[in-house]
Amino acid sequence: MKKYFQFEELGTNYRREFIGGLTTFLSMAYILFVNPTTLSLLSVGDFPDELRIDQGAVFTATAVAAAVGSLLMGLVAKYPIALAPGMGLNAFFSFSVVLGMGIPWQTALSGVLVSGIIFVLLTLTGLREKIINAIPAELKLAVGAGIGLFITFVGFQSAGIIVNDDTVLVGLGDLTNGNTLLAVFGLVVTVILMVKGVKGGIFYGMLITAIAGMIFQLIDIPTQVVGSVPSVAPTFGQALFNLDQLFTLNMLVVILTFLFVDFFDTAGTLVAVATQAGLMKENKLPRAGKALFADAGATVVGAIFGTSTTTSYIESTAGVAAGARSGFASVVTAGFFLLALFFSPLLGVITAPVTAPALIIVGALMVSSLGKIAWDRFEIAVPAFLTIIAMPLTYSIATGIAAGFIFYPITMVIKGKAKEIHPVMYGLFIIFILYFVFLTY
Image 1 (cartoon, rainbow, N blue to C red):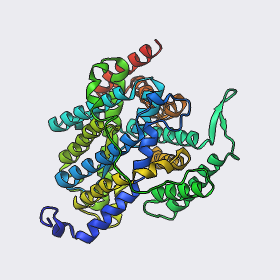
Image 2: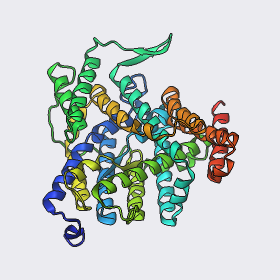
Image 3: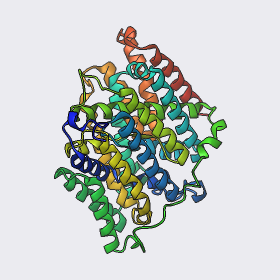
């Protein structure tokens, strides 16, 4: 085992890897509860229950996808990087695709499955790098920041801090409402934990908020903590039964969005974690193909079980900081996700006000990429800004991406830099123009 994971070469041991794996799990355990509430549109009160995806099934699918993805990453790619359904992508799935476009969650899962299969093929053929390189770095950064703002907006809505206002579209909510106050309390607690550098601060913030909610009778006290694993039957295999519904322009844009965002998330996370762990060699990532395959394979498995796109988690840096250096840490993280399957009764105490602070904080972390955009170059600033601002204002990640990818060729051509535009960008320009044209019908 030590030889397989290269403990001696990496200067690590079982204890360091176990602690690193556990730290990573605690840092990202919030996804077990945030993902089911997000995909089931729990914060949207007037959404028909018969159109909601089953929360218990998503909880199980989330844990399984995270365990499978982390195992693949640990055993095949041998990196201390854990995977789980991605924040941002789950919001796109729920609020843009299901709520905004009116696409059934079953069809949306089919879109996730196809995007995962395409990701696998692109990884195996080596085309993935060429496509990634075709998209300007500034637009990649803008997509990440825009998703961060979108998630934050969703979090404020879930908390009741931002509400509908017929006069000015949105306004400040009732800060005397008990659930809103609970969310504000959770936000303050989570910010304090994060500023103090507490590993797993988001998870512990949710835990403290839930306990406070039970003390003040805003949340029902669970009758048990450990229970049976929720059935995955309501969602399992649904992605395979709706593939014939994908042949529309809307679904093409949905699939492309799933694919692009997963591309950006994975590439950025792999490099960031590997750099922190000192695993980069001559500015290149060894076994990059295997790491990308683990990510793509986990997305396929997750879609079949019933969850949105699975991706590499930047929270893995917490495990690296705690000593993780090898894939064994990811195996440990996978084990904890499987163990977590038996704690489903806690889903009942993870209400919208409890998860809202997590969404807001994750959003704040994602907008850090804003500082890397060349704002002094107007031909870059305009498409980047439109990408970022359109996501929360139109309540659609896809619309934000479309706006940026349309304006980028326009501004670059006018600037006299047409030769710097990759042919792939012209193809996407046409696709997204058609998206807006047919969106009006």
